[in-house]
Length: 501
Ligand SMILES: Nc1ncnc2c1ncn2[C@@H]1O[C@H](COP(=O)(O)OP(=O)(O)O)[C@@H](O)[C@H]1O
Ligand SMILES: [Mg+2]
Image 1 (cartoon, rainbow, N blue to C red):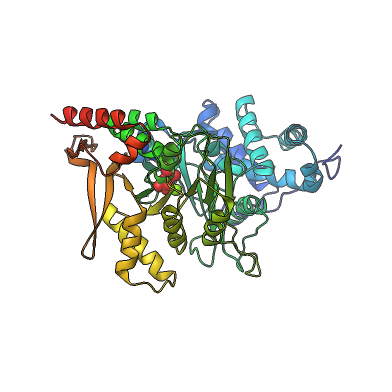
Image 2 (image 1 turned 60 degrees about the vertical axis):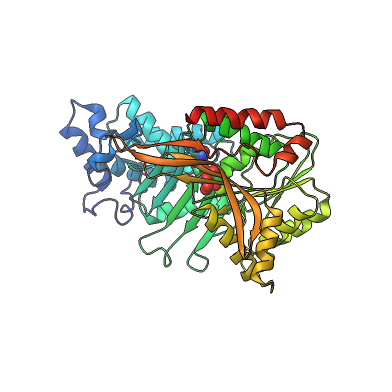
C-alpha cells in the first residue's frame, strides 16, 4: 500500500508523548490506558468525555459564549488519545510517500491506518468521535493542524497563537481566547515550518523571524525562540474572500451613506488619497473599496509587501516586495518598486502600505501626472499621518528642509481618510479631511466628515455619530466638476447636512 512504511501496525509501546502533553508512565500503553480509563469513567456521556467541553485552564469562563464564537475545546483525555494515535501513525506511515498522494488519497490512507490503530489499541470511540479524531489527525499530517478549523471560518479576522497552549482569535473587532492548542512547541513549530516553507523560507533559531503567506492569501508572521520567550508565536491576518465594498462599510456603520458617496467621488475623480489608521483599523479594506471607483480604462500598478488588494479592473499590474534571502541579499524594497512603477506608464499607483523612504517617490508620482494615486499609512490621527509622512522622508536620507517636505506633501495629497478601531471593537472612518495648502510652516487641512463618540451604552458599546462639518464646496470641487461629478458631490454634501439637523 502506497505511503505505508510497513503493512503491520506495530503494537508496541508508543514513544512517550512529547514533553508537556501527558505525564510519563511505566504502563505499556500509557496514552491508550489513560484514554481508556478516561472513557471508562464516563461511559454514559460520550461527547462529554471527549468533547467540546471546556478546560478551565485553556478557556476562562468569560470567553466561552461571547458572540457564540467558541471554538471547540477538547479535553486532556482527547489529546492523550490523539497523541497516542498520531505517534503510532507516524511510525507506520512514510510521510514522504504520503506527500506524493493527492489530498483525497492521502486522507483515505490515513483513515485506514488510524482505524487499524484504534482497533488494535482497543480505544473505545463512538463513530462521531472517531470522525473528529480522524479529521484532526489529517489536519495535523496534511494541513495546518489545529489551525485548520479556524482557517475555514470566514468571520475570523486574525488568528494569534502565543505558544502551543494559547490561541486567540479576533472576530468582529473583539479578541477572544479559543480552546485550540498544539501538542507542544515542537508541534507548533512544525506547523510554522510548513507554512513558511511554502514560500521558500525557513524559521529556526538562526532566522527566528519570518513573514509568509498562506495559499489563500492570508498574511502570516512567525517569531520563535529565543526572540519569542514563551514559545513560537504565529500571527495570521486572514484573507477575506468576500472583500468589503463601500456599501458594506455603510451597512457596518463605518461611514454614512452620504460619506460613502463623497468617498466614491473622491476615488472616481482621481484625488490623491492617503488612508491612515492604526493596525487592523481597516485601512487596506478601505483602500480596496476605494479602488472600486477607478475607471476600467485606467492602467493601475499596485505595490505591496504581501499582495492583499483585490482590484476588479482589467488593467492592473501587481507588484510585491521581496525580503532578503538567508544570506541577507536580494531584497527588493517598496522604494525599488515605486521607483520602477514610474517607468511602467501607470495612470495610478497604489501603494499598499507606505512605511519608509518610498513616501518620497509616491509623493513625486502624485505630483507628476499620476493623479488618483493612493496609499495607506500607519498613524493615530490625520495630523500624525502628515507628520509621519514627513519623518519618513527625512529618515529616508533626503536632505530637504522641513518646509520643502511639507510643501511637497501639501501639493501632492488631496484627501486624507482616517479610520480607527474603537475600543468596543467597531471600526469607523473617523475623518475625511482635505489638505488645503500651507500657512507659514503648517500644512492646513479641513475636515469634511468626522465621527464623534458621545458616550457608551449599558453593554459597553460606544455611542457616536458621523457628522458633516458643513463644508459645501470642498477644495476638490473643480476636479469633481471636471469629471462631471459636481451635481453628485453637491447632493451628497447637502444630504449630509440635512441629516445632521
Ligand atoms: N468597517 C469594518 N467593519 C468590520 N470589519 C472591518 C471593517 N473594516 C475592516 N474590517 C475587517 O478588519 C480586518 C482588518 O482590516 P484591514 O483593512 O486589513 O486593516 P489594516 O489594513 O488597517 O491593518 C479585516 O479582516 C477586515 O475585513
Ligand atoms: Mg493593511
